[in-house]
Length: 116
Length: 113
Image (cartoon, rainbow over all chains, first blue to last red; front, side, top):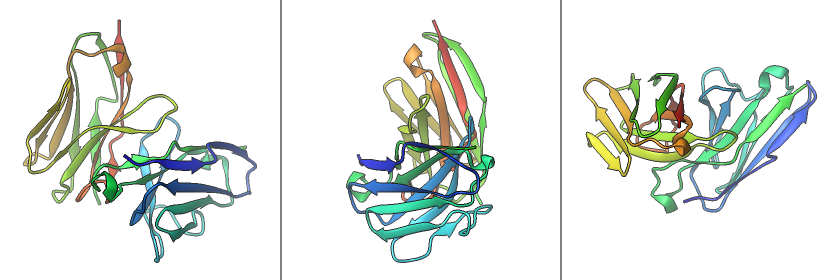
């Protein structure tokens, strides 16, 4: 398995501000994925964070709104910028470490964001 | 890109009955199909997965079937128990979890006593 530490676990933020979410993994991984789960909805991929290169964003998500850092093979951050109430969601990071076979995707516990 | 549809959105069964959740995918190149269980307020957890070179896989009360020609795959839970109550998501990807997952819309399963 993989141990993924994500923080903060929850936050309430004012509109117009930014929040940075951290994801720490207990083993080195090539790719880290960031998902959004809106209330009562499924998981939607925001972007893939590769170490040493720019993140790859999915359709509908842009770097200016969701800048991502990937300074090393065990850590990544996702920033939600200039927040509005529509950004209220759970944000989850995910990895599929080789140490666990490289197939199964594990998720962090999520960051529950409420924008007021 | 890949598109995954999932049905039904809600499913209510009596304890001991079977539950079946169905998914279809659009990209014939997808070759890995996991199922996740998400309990309220918790992270998704893998319960079973199947690769495209296998038609069926079983793990105790849980089984998954795959029809690659029709691009359908299904989750079967037998002898349901109250602790099976949760939201279940199917997903599809190319090469496995090391690649991005496209999730279905989810099924809220309720097992009633």
